[in-house]
Length: 150
Ligand SMILES: [Zn+2]
Image (cartoon, rainbow, N blue to C red; front, top):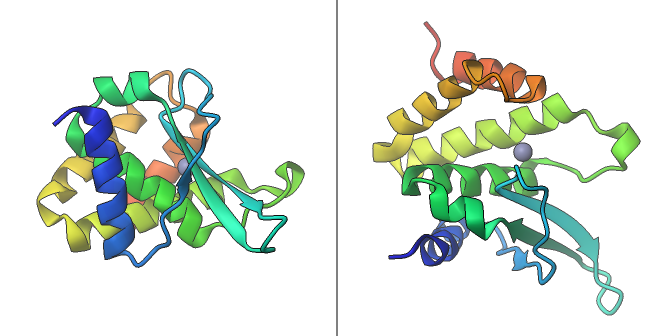
């Protein structure tokens, strides 16, 4: 299966298993070149309901392993499930990334247990990645310590 189809199929599966309303795929799919995926929210003028949108970078998805695609999806759904989308100046980015990632690891452990050791490994790889933003390194240490206490 190609990676884009796998992404869309897995997004549906993760939403079903975590009882999360499917985000709409954003028509405007522009993302910074280093971003794999992101979710954002908007309020419908017609219904007044909050809608979630998913953007994803097809070029990067095509280069990723399927295990990492699952991880990214669970992380983004973690943002939908745990994060109140606030104004930029109010954001506590480490806290938001930590909550989303903790949701991702718990979801993988519960619903995709075979992928769980890989997910921990992937998170550990952040710590040795010189290009990785400090926010994500701090978040990774916190989640690993919580999920895998020594
Ligand atoms: Zn995130």
